Length: 219
Length: 316
Ligand code: HEM
Image 1 (spheres, rainbow over the protein chains, first blue to last red):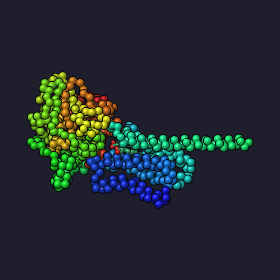
Image 2: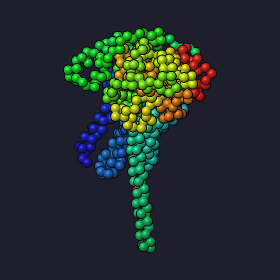
Image 3: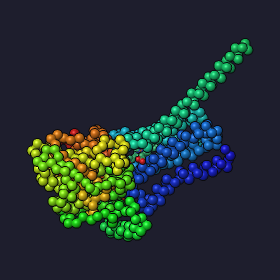
Image 4: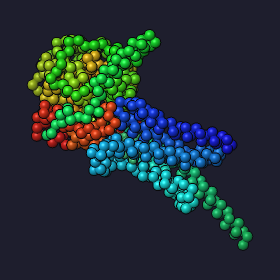
């Protein structure tokens, strides 16, 4: 993949990530968020966060499959956009669903209750707090500072994806296709990831034993 | 129990009359203009303008004085799983449902079991406009001007036997015209039930219209139940059968998830749903879920006595 093609891909990805938010903003401005604005805001931001998160997790497998190494830089871009929508989602929940927009209506106890009592809210929180450290450590400085541990830490992205999908599944009143579809996509991505690291480990073991064998011969 | 009076309700939560009227006019003009271009389009079926008016409707003292929501709000945002699980599905797909002719079977423990043609079922009754608060279990609410008549009037007419303790209702099952019934989202047909005293309560009505017009399909045409102090799913739509029974009848959401939906399902801010609190609600159109939910949806004065001595945490 050429640098030019990569630039075009980046423009498209930015446009795709800005679109849902811009659309919400536009509709909010014109008072056109549907019959239940609280729900529209919560649903759009939540689903967008999950979809972008899944896209960011798909980058590495796609890169390996195609050999287009330049794609790797999309992973951070997408991850940060997913976090942006998750943050918006959480803010909508606090401001509108929990009514904290009006100080008099805001009850911390109600929020804590909601998290403690409802596994559907708790799973959303898990997803959010799995994404938070990833967003904070996404800079070059942190990547350098954390070294190998950065890789390990960023496996939390899978935790966020899984918790997000479970959050969606638990949210619906009757089983629906979409949440299971997202859950399924996550499972596939996870399986690809595990399969890849197994193969890599086996290959490494193979290499080590070849080295040992050649030493034996030499001695 | 402290009940909020209508005047306590923040006016910004309610669509002002002028907006409601001007939207109506706009819709009418738009619909009139659209006829040429979209003659016969299903879009028109959703319009206030296109829906047939009901004549001879009396006002009722049981109506709330709160400002009603708009036609669009009430007809474009519905839970009617027979047409799909999304709020927009009923408005999109209910147009295919044929509601004429319509028969309602009244059977079970009654003196006169009958298959009523809809017209004959309605004809003897004085239709009234009842403006009621409507509270969905999903913590949103609306104010809707129904047209209907007390279920009690029909019950008296068909004379249930003394042993009949419950009334069971069934929705039409017609998967060809109800795409949601081709999925397993719920067990079909949809069924609901009331205890006899709930069914006989003067607030309980069979509705045939909204806003003075015949019910649009997505709102449960041609005839539905409205029980304003219970969560919306109790108010079963598109009824084809009313049975008088001795034992508590099965109800659809209870079958789907007994831990989350009980038989009574009275609006109760003190008993939270496993997945959301019921303490507050979003008045449709409002940006914030900050309206405190009232016990029995604000109808406690009229209905609390039905549940005297019952543990409402247990019988949710
Ligand atoms: C920070 C904690 C979070 C809280 C308190 C929270 C809360 C909520 C609430 C209240 C809803 C709406 C439920 C309804 O209307 O019935 C919702 C929906 C949703 N949330 Fe979250 N959420 C959180 C984090 C997340 C995260 C991090 C993701 C994505 C990775 C996410 C994805 C979703 C999705 C996909 C939906 C469903 C959207 C739809 O129905 O179309 N949430 N969440």
